[in-house]
Image 1 (tube, rainbow, N blue to C red):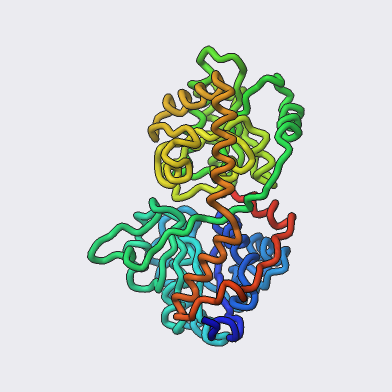
Image 2: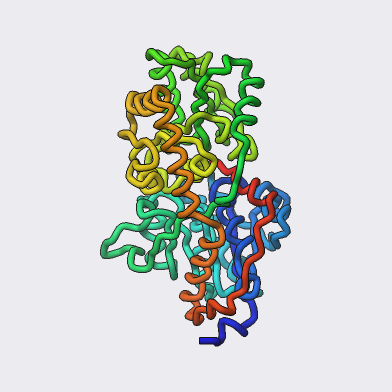
Length: 416
């Protein structure tokens, strides 16, 4: 049917972001908005800080950003106090006026802090709210607020989806896996040679990577414990554990991790590499990715490792199980067990042919399952359904232009 979807004016979609820590959700949104059909939906990014890192990420790629008002910044990876909640409530009238001034038919929120600061204003303004669930399925917002406020919940994995119940958003939820630039290519040999030169280590060294923010859910101390256990074993090659990422607490966590490695006798083989871009290059430089996280909804670096040919050892927890197809394309081990992580890594070190086979199978799987353009089509279908717009005729649907190489590279930097 050729109808309203073909001839209507493109509709604006508001993407607010609270805070200024760039993570996986921001790069996922970047991949989405660069692939939206401009004849159907026009994204407007509303970062909290006009000249901050979030604003720069999108603005540098020619995506419209505007910061028309101030609102309360909630703490990163910490609980919210009643005082902060009261401050958020004071922001709602201004947010409503802004949303009605466009007006926006859809507000698309993408992380816990933004759900908390924009969801109620979106609904009170008359907009439809798409609540993109990228975090803990046990989060209070998803359990208590989403059933009332969200018109639609999109979860990045089955694990992240709301649980059924009398008061639940499960009935209006669906799974849409995060998008990735599946055509990414990296020079693995060149990236590895760069690491060897930088670290001044034995060229035979096995580089085992941790990628992500240094927060409790990612379990960086468990990663260090696994490296310490592995190094004490009889291995054919030396090993090094490389922590790519950072904390956001002025260096306190970095110092604690350094002390922990020293106490475990691994201070000389555990290195903190900082936050580096593009992330895929450093993933390609590593011989394996060791995912120690517990309850990770759907880690970006795990998929990116698959796409660049780096084999993965991960805890059998959260979205890791879905991503690695129940362990068929990667090694899954019991969570919270440093010895099990070390066992998985040891198996790949001692059986390099198995590691290569797993990596090749995982790469093919990731390329077939994930993609920016397919993801954008699925999200636009959600928008259409929320607004009850007939789906466009596939024969006349506009083709989204390819994503620029620079954008594909930058989108792979996230450590969420």
